[in-house]
Amino acid sequence: MAPPQTLPISQLGKDGPRVPRLGFGLMGLSIAYGPVPSEQDRLALLDHAWSLGATFWDTAQMYGDSEELVGKWFRLHPERRSDIFLATKFAIRSTVSAASPSSGPARISWTIDSSPEECRTACAESLQRLGTDYIDLYYVHRFDKTTPVEKTVEAMVELKEQGKIRHLGFSECSSSTLRRGYAVHPITAVQIEYHPWALEIESDAGTNLLATCRELGVAVVSYSPLGRGALTGRFKSLTDLDPTDLRTQLPRFHQDNFSQNLRLVQVIEEIAASKTLPASSSSQITSTQVTPAQLTLAWLLSQGPDIFPIPGTKSPHYLEQNLGALKVTITPDEDARIRAVIKELGGAAGYRTIGLTDSYSDTPPL
Ligand SMILES: NC(=O)c1ccc[n+]([C@@H]2O[C@H](COP(=O)([O-])OP(=O)(O)OC[C@H]3O[C@@H](n4cnc5c(N)ncnc54)[C@H](OP(=O)(O)O)[C@@H]3O)[C@@H](O)[C@H]2O)c1
Image 1 (cartoon, rainbow, N blue to C red):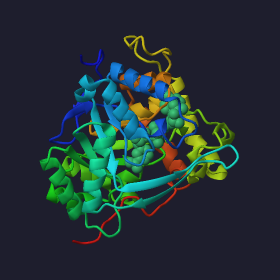
Image 2: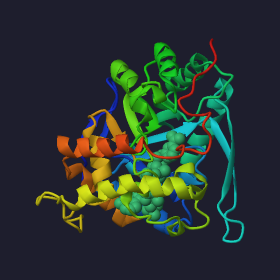
Image 3: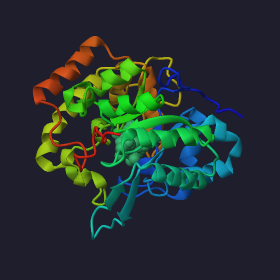
């Protein structure tokens, strides 16, 4: 049985499949943002997402037990495997030290390996954990500094020829890496952080990656589209974060930076407060006033049909609310107001990830 509801869909990349315009990021269901719900609740959330038509799921080898969780769900509902457009990623092996109120946030350390050998090994392991025999979209999560991108793509093409993966994706690549990889085999999607706090993709700071994706016909999958939750307006102070929350380690959430970054959140809140959802909206949406989360996602969707945000949540309520963004229209004036305040602030303060060196990565020559 197909999901009872469907979302608006769009083609992922110029030759890619048609997928829901909004994806569902599964990282926070397993790691990073404080305590996670019980397995029963997490499986119920996956059920709920499926029933709402939110069937473009994003996981990764490095997201704790995320792939195992999806695998359990597939085993419970084997007939639903083909309803899900499943993306996962390889090339980061992580070790997570446990979080606790006394020792603070979980510490994640990782190694990056985008070699052909790791690509083959990691894919076999992911398929095993996921309990499926194919991955719809397989991303290089990060590029190491020793493997030419052509070699990584050749290994991915082998996996595709074996029927283990269906589409190829990159995450955090430079324009040059994308062009070189694309010359070996078309890349369907690039996953990168993109939202009003992270606009590097639009400029030299992000190697003009958005323009390169558009030239080649590669979709842009916007990760952390809610600014890791901050653009929802939910966090007014850093004390709102659980002490075990990974965000406490991110520069954008350091005290001085956070105070400045909240100014953009305030503008998003003001614009959201002035808008209501259209009357025809689904009964699943409890509030008729547009929320800051919806406004942020709608802003991203309004940047073009090639942008696919993948917000994450542990909550059925937020999941439903975020899907409401598909009904929100952003006017040119609202876009201009958001961009004006970003310009006035000089962008968000503090780098967006813990490590600078793995973003918009180049790889060595072949
Ligand atoms: N390629 C990469 O390197 C990379 C890096 C990071 C993330 N990702 C992918 O992107 C996905 C999404 O990113 P993300 O989870 O980092 O950040 P995000 O989607 O920007 O934000 C998630 C946070 O926002 C909160 N939230 C969600 N909807 C909300 C709403 N309507 N109102 C209030 N709060 C709301 C969530 O809270 P609750 O959890 O409490 O519901 C969570 O704390 C991940 O799951 C992962 O699949 C990829």
